[in-house]
Length: 256
Image 1 (cartoon, rainbow, N blue to C red):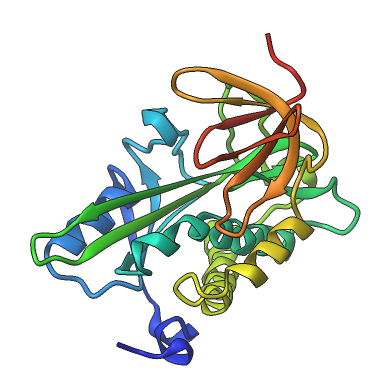
Image 2: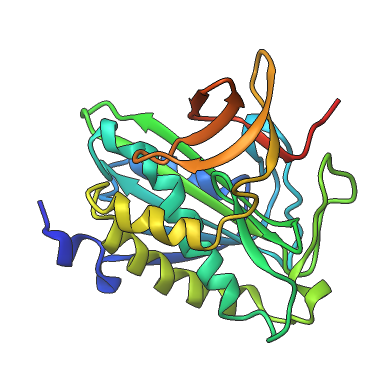
């Protein structure tokens, strides 16, 4: 297996640009089943069946960036929980490289929503699959609102053009390609979680604030107490109880 300096070096990544696809994540997983070795970026001008977390539809008209990165066996399973943090750090850096000076604050909402002025600008979806040869494929889907944004959403949304950033998807992808390689090299198959967590907290939104976390079966409200060493959200619900949460939708404040 390639060492730290080789596996996630900039030169180790490939890119294939497509026109219309159903979903760049699906395309990555199809390539994985066909034996692709990973470190493959797939971008598309338009997605016809883009999706977000929990099967939500994702606006996919031309003008936004639609990109997915295929990784094969990116880390042992017990170290994979921190990967969404690394992805968020890279995407935040890529958007930060193109936003005009003086823009509203660019932050990360746990685990990997990218907010500008506390409005969502980007969707990130990680999907994994065990392959028939025993390998594990992971597709990291990233959709960044440049020109378009959803008309109706349960949360505030924005696009880069709302902040004076008129950039092409290709230009933005060049920054994402570079930043992702840099952060994955630091992440180092999960061994670099301490440094990734530090960088994530530097750009995190809402630490110390009251938040509500919607889980599949219930909602929890408490104080956002940061993240633990595995990247799990720490929720202080009072009376000395701090819960570690692996997955959920986070909202600021108390929701009814």
